[in-house]
Image (cartoon, rainbow, N blue to C red; front, side, top):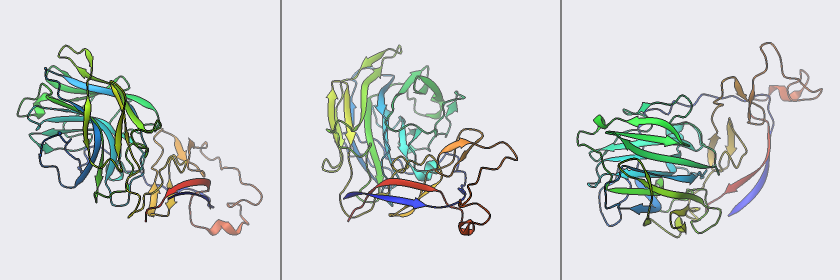
Amino acid sequence: MRYSVGVLVLACSVAQAAPPAPDGVVAPKGRPVIPGTALPHAEGLFLYAGYYQDPGTATAGAGAKMKQGDPGLAIGDAHSLGEIAVISADQRQIVEIGWTVDPAVNGDAHPRLFIFHWVDGAPTCYNSCGFVSMSATHKPGMRVTPGEVADYGIALRGTDWWLSYQGVDLGYFPGSLWPTPFTVAGHVQWFGEIAAGTAESCSEMGNGAKGRDPAAASMSGLYLVAPGGARVPAIAMTGTVTNSAYWSVGQTAPDAFAFGGPGAPFGCCTPKTCADSMAACGRVADSCGPQLNCGTCSAQGDICDEVLQCSPAPPPGEQPAADDAGCCSAGSPLRALPSLAVLALVLRRRRRR
């Protein structure tokens, strides 16, 4: 059941802690499922909805434009993401790029850019583990904007696998990371994934809309990379869909599809998202349990203000103006309240019973 509730929390300031650096975090990651196979997964339960293509010819990468989501993550689940995976013919070597909501990796509940790779069937770690960063402005772990369509790409150059976001080269995984040479893709996937504690997860995939909903998260302009670097339109097919009652796909064009869903309608509680709460930073109370961590401000000199937005810090020595009867004036009885956030918002919540 969905319902809206008005929330007003009074306070004088916002206490924050910087999120842990995302680089090199080891956390659950499902091996992209090859339709018709029974390869073992990494530990944990992974739920999928997506498309795939077996190129049949030498392929040196893949990409797409993704409409980025902001899924609500159920208590006990690890992540919900959208990604592209380039996989060797023996299914043991993989390079991945996408966006993810993963509090353990990222330190908050915002969707962020991620990269990952597998070597001889073994998972490595998020955003590092040999990755050579080449951009001063675009890096794995950076926030991405929900609802924005962004270009994601993987391409082999020489023996190295390069990853790009919005046309900017992020960097590369050196070919030397693979003892077994990995210089051609035998399989490509575009999909959504949830790392869950149960098959009846109530985590959202994509943006919570099912694949045939026009508002659903999507991937368009699916392409493969020819050995010379040219982009070739993909001819993808429906891949693994774990439970179409909860998460599904829908083709929107020959080279495009939408994916996602709300998850199971019972049995657990899915917290609201930072975007639902209109919170760019700080922490938001949530009826599902722990406070929702919306992180800190990434721009140098910005602070998280009273309404949980990032704004420029006042000049040194300058104090914010106080009204005559505000919470922070000397005579106000609210001055003794603990440091919380001043927030008056209408918040969407999803409860599962």
